[in-house]
Length: 153
Image 1: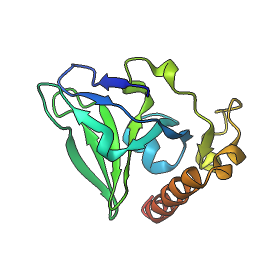
Image 2: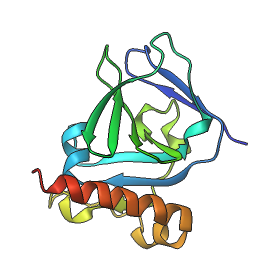
Image 3: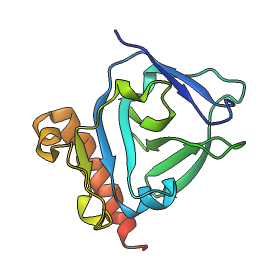
Image 4: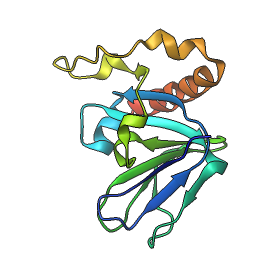
């Protein structure tokens, strides 16, 4: 069993995860771009029950970004930590908050059509995510949520 740990920029929010990751991916949807302030966000999903917040700040503050999703962030430094989809058994963690982001290698890119034309993510194969049923379920949910959000932009 692997262990993953990470936290925000200021150290107020710290977490530990003791389960295996699924669906490591980049997302280029407009919601992720605006939330992260970047052309692409790097995410990895873990079973929600395996996530333990152990920093002095406790759990991240939550902001509802659409009807079915909340984003977690540090209320002190503003670092984006996670995304929580209502009813999901998984939590999406931002790869950049891991203490060792080299533990995770994105295997897919969601919404490449929304990426800026200058962004080239050549190291991932989108079809690989479709091959795994758990990943497919997560990917479909992510696409559904982001399709709803596209209407707002």
